Image 1 (spheres, helix red, strand yellow):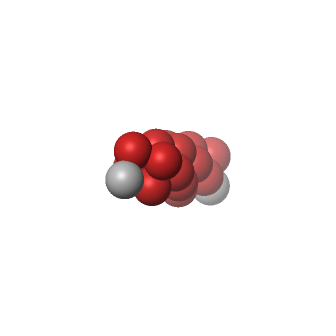
Image 2 (tube, rainbow, N blue to C red; image 1 turned 120 degrees about the vertical axis):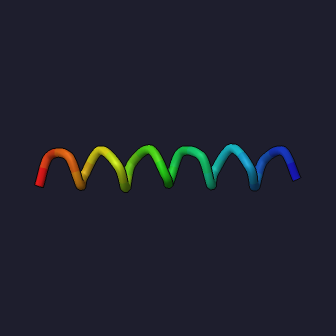
Image 3 (tube, one colour; image 1 turned 90 degrees about the vertical axis):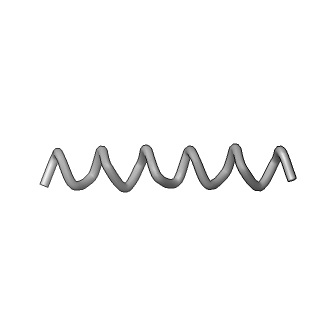
Length: 22
């Protein structure tokens, strides 16, 4: 559960970063 949450958070941060960059 913790691993999934960490991956989800990392994915969300990456998505937000790509949106900001784009």
